[in-house]
Length: 506
Image 1 (cartoon, helix red, strand yellow):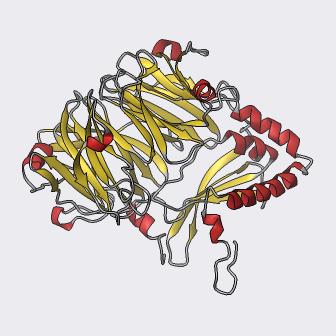
Image 2: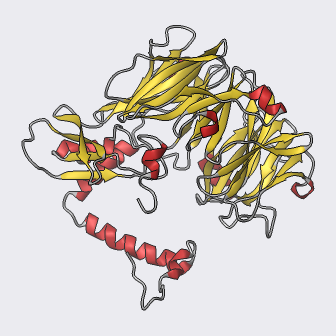
């Protein structure tokens, strides 16, 4: 930690994150560190082993399945450093060597334009390949420009929706209309550097002429929006969000008379629409509805569009050792992901005759798994599965058939010899009596203390779960080391209360 001198912070210049003095200082510290690492006689071998794992061509190419059964994937390796956006058929994807069609080569684009382009994602019109935008960041910074891109012809639209560098947020209303929160010049960004003005931008207009539909405040963290759509991709409503700070927000629904504030607590967020029910996730108690922090609930969205009266209905309430990891909807199904004592579970949900029903899926024990892809095109999902000692596998589950049946799509090869290690879970008791879970991965033959790496996070309500690490296994476990993952307070392993217990004065 750098120290101030006589009450004066002599290192304020480090806050100029792109300043020459700050960058030169960082480069010098990196050079010192690298010299120490390279001076270790083990460095060359370990570095070579690490590069072989990072550059491996046989890792799972995670992708999303579209309505035409094509799998889209973003791929990086030592040749494609900036990455390829590519796609293939699902039948080809199942093979050991899929035949990929390149949609956009970001290395080629950067070389052609002599820019340090880094791909930062994209946004597209519902159920469309023709209308979409790609975000391009110069050097990887948060601010990026966006360009309209036609994924059918694999070309940029020169006269399309194109935006200058900024921390933009966009969503497609239809093929000729965008919602956009953008840097519109001096005084249009929050103190955190994000837009707080939302406009409706029609094709052919300049951004300056786009019609403003909502504005937050410069004191907010940011302003955003979301589209509520039915399972057939039809737009049902536009929601607008004011992030008052990192945790608290206000939600508005856009009406013919303008934005209307919804009567939600500041830490209750709405998401997908499922069978007419708007799904609500709670990070605080909602006494008026009989709901608690950590609950998953719903309300009738058609009613909410007409009135500010809400009658919420409980879907899932976590037990003492549980937390909600998330939920996913398909055309006619809904899946919720649960952690129980930091062990993954998937539950199939249904809503019929005014009531919710849950059914736990049959999944392997002591593994981490979650839904990696789902769309409204059909009722199929892909699920990723791994643990500390087992490489990740990707399965296809058809929820119209047997939801307990898993069809293996891809499996990553082992990166290290895990045969001598075991995983066990323990608990440490804090001074206030709270039991803190932690996982220990160590050689079975170990009889006493040994070289150990301990990792813990505990922040932003993020759950740190068991997962396969090829580098950790090859460079540490395979050499006889022990690894400990501690699930400390501040994370999300046991819900909002666990998170709050690790914030500020806690």
